[in-house]
Length: 165
Image (cartoon, rainbow, N blue to C red; front, side):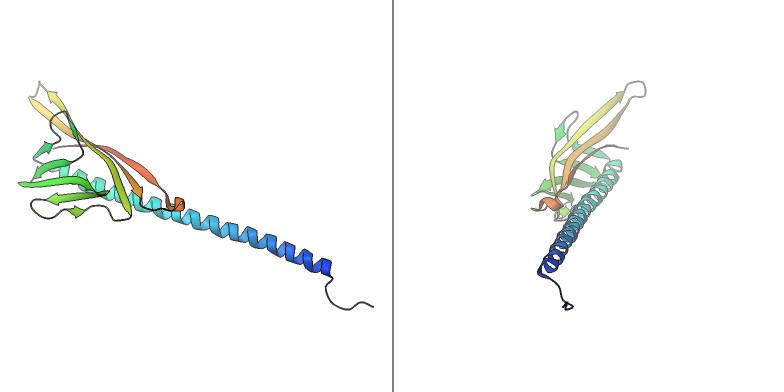
């Protein structure tokens, strides 16, 4: 006589299928979480690079003179004069800073971003025909997301050149 229940074999089979489905679904959620973390890290780094590049570009283009780096040299800091005010860019504890005049330095990047290996190189092109020297500043530095988790690991380099007008 058959009673409406499950046999032990059927119960084990259902548990095995359910277990496999749970593993597959949890792996999908873990992969989505990693992808989301990497995407957020990439977005923050890219946003910081765009902001820093635009700020540097505006200051360099409007500079009346560049004192550091010297002619033909490179430096880890950039010092320029704009509207009779000295502006200094430097890196302190992985943070890109901008100091205007005697005011305290202001962070250009947020605490989630680390900036390393800054190099500002002065490039001069002397045109003897017009008695004019064109000056450009080549900027190289690396921006990375400040995280101990490999899921949030992302870094990229900023490499650009800005002409002084």
